[in-house]
Image 1 (cartoon, rainbow, N blue to C red):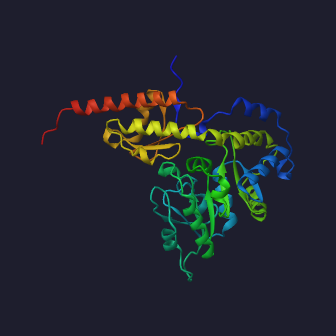
Image 2: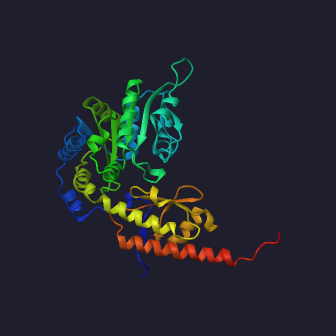
Image 3: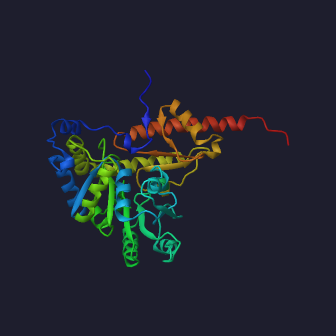
Length: 359
């Protein structure tokens, strides 16, 4: 029997723990649209407490959480400033435009990290016939930059200066607990100046479903209505919130293991022929590497990797992303490295033995 593939496509592929499954089966439930689900209410209260906010809202996904916040902070026809590779721009089905009626104003960050100087240059002047800037969105950690982390003081400065300029700031903090682990800081201090924060329970924290929005009481009241507008009003959602509570309390404690495994993988990959990445840039649990010099596209390389029991996802034609998570052990990472090394070396030998073309 073939070995079970090691799935590094995302940290969303994790399975709920036995403790989560028991909690889900035994959850006390009610109708959350009527705000009567006690388990959802506990989850929301705990999330608000951890982040030092007045209120929180449970939503089905991070994409919905981001979209709800974008709608809450803006009106159609306005602009949102974000990094050119931001998740809200690249991987959320153009919802900011198609649903919220917003125009993205893209700024190229260094490894996904923007500065206030870059943002300030992108703010539209207040004049007739131009879409007006309403919102700045930061992403921490930054997915497509390889899980890079915003220095807290930089994020705080952006919030402060944006507020002085009359702009609001939303944080796509899907993996904010990974950032907190890397910085050895607490999410409350890291995110307190943002007008809204979305974070995922279903990524590194290990819950099967769900994300949270935290903010002021007035904001969350508005977000609750928008969630319903988008079809996100759930009924006996306590069966999901029960797993989310365990993820929130216990998930952050072990994220450092994922980071160590990602660092190990990055260093191993960097030694392989035809693979290019800088291991020093791997800060959290995401590893992105270039396979152009192997002679295969990312899709072709992944197809060969899958035959060897290793799963990842393409970023573009040349780059691949792999994400470590709670269902991947150090031994698994060593297996992954061995499999990819065997593939890379076989491709290198094939290139070396290929007949030279006539000049």
